Image 1 (tube, rainbow, N blue to C red):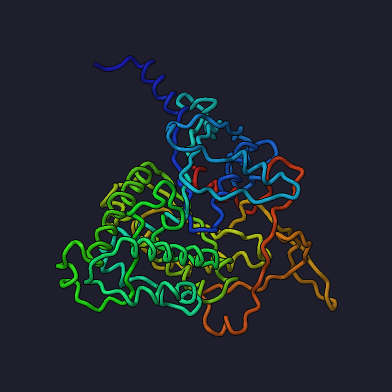
Image 2: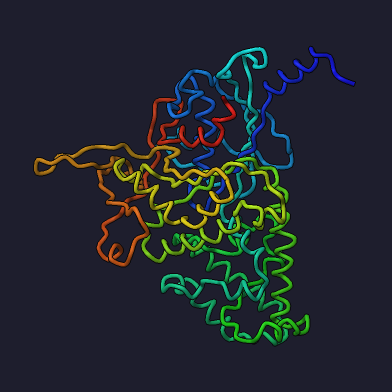
Length: 462
């Protein structure tokens, strides 16, 4: 039976008032996810008051009235620690928020005036924005779903690069002496798995990105469980068919069984339970940190991103589509820490990011997934300055190092394409790690957070 016209209008108006969007903030370790989320919440809460959001039309036109935090729907997931993050930034001296060590979420209600008014458009509307965060270390587990144990061992990069090999030297020596066909020794497996995990932790501390499995770095409730007591065998030369036929109590069969269990019981449920809920996604990348760390770590980042974006192929034939049928309809890829280079280099940062992700970006655009690459600083740590030297003006940055030293530096030029060997031999690119800036405003100072917000949710505020 057809509803009365007044009820149809009422339902339509109600739908117009209540929109919902679920945004996933993802990124590799040390890309600044916690800082990004803290700034995102801060900017939206201060929209129309102190926040500088000129690149977000709803805010620039005065239509975005602000945001309030709501109780999240999933009471079994911790709330994103916005208040502790803001307390750290307001401390004396200011500190960076502590990185999150597990899944967290936050729900905001944004209130705004629609751009158009009329019979079918309410005077005021609101958008419910659900924000999801999880450790970057877990992100690189997704490519594991494309492997079995044998192919994963073949794909490992532990032997690529002198610096990386050095971090795993003792573990590699012990593993090389193993016989995959011998009977498994549980005590030995636990010892070698812990040694492998220690190597991964050292590699993370040294700035490497391609680190698997991610739960070895942040095990959470799985710490000490047998599911985390496996490791790759980097020198397999026995045919796969022969290894697959070994008895269950052999070293190879035991490691392969634990790898499969990790895939099925740890990796798949995590992505199935969380990725199916996302509408939009931003992937944060610390391109400048890798460039600062040298060629081996930069290539490591490039390899990790290629693996990740192949898994995040949003076309119909993608791994995620086959497994979880996601609904992500817009993607941003952002190079973070833009305030660590002078403004004239920001364009090069974006070009370098696009060069790193050239093939995945082509695939995304071919799949008709709207994608935008940009550079940003979620929370500013430096101010742009000009210095006069020999009668010439040049750009510089002023900031305070983590050790408390006030410095005026020029970090160097950012290449606008993938650096070649000549760049690494002659480049002078270098910057220190800075504290966040002290600010008298409640709204955090940023670079292009408004552009990122506009791309991710701006169309929902029209």
